[in-house]
Image (cartoon, rainbow, N blue to C red; front, side, top):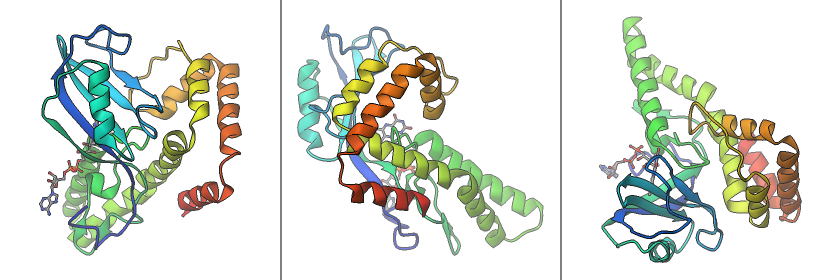
Length: 251
Ligand SMILES: Cc1cc2nc3c(=O)[nH]c(=O)nc-3n(C[C@H](O)[C@H](O)[C@H](O)COP(=O)(O)OP(=O)(O)OC[C@H]3O[C@@H](n4cnc5c(N)ncnc54)[C@H](O)[C@@H]3O)c2cc1C
């Protein structure tokens, strides 16, 4: 993004994330119960606008991290203290959670990965989406070459694929992510309680729409109540913010 932001300007929504690989011998309900379990902590006192995570790596070894829009270092050290983890070498950076450029090609330059907003906005996960963008670009070039087309045509094809299949989805999920992480506060606790102990099996762990729809069908009434709690909270938010969100999504 540092290299291309002058060529393809756009404004991503982001939070800052810090994580570390460390040890913890804490016995607490926050810790994963097995090596197959990932703990995600939604606690507005810990992370006001995002979440924290504890991912098992090995016996008593974990990747522990947190993201938020401000004071992340303080919150990160607080999290380590809560679960009694050693402070090892931290690493992290910006996590993109929304926004999308209008195009991913300018002249003979094509962008892939975070720089082009190829992320899953609900979690900021950009590894699979980044690889997908690289594959889309590679296949566009290889197909264009096979057809005897020019490199300009190949890049136009990549841009067209991005606009047709990726951009709309990222923008819609970006708005949902903005509502979940940045706007709702009180209703988050309600949702967690209403939907607690709902188990859903999904083929793709990162397919959030599928997971939400399955959870909704498991407990339709609770799901509607949860939605009403969100709508109720959103109705108290200054209308200009919601209008801006709708405008951005439609653009
Ligand atoms: C704390 C944290 C946790 C995350 N967890 C997950 C996760 O669990 N799952 C997931 O899918 N995603 C996760 N992500 C997001 C994921 O890391 C990114 O989406 C992904 O790394 C983006 O890959 P990229 O190649 O597009 O960009 P980057 O990985 O950012 O690569 C860009 C590279 O460009 C280099 N660079 C910058 N400026 C210059 C310059 N001027 N000249 C030369 N090189 C330059 C940088 O050093 C960097 O190596 C996480 C991000 C953070 C910060």
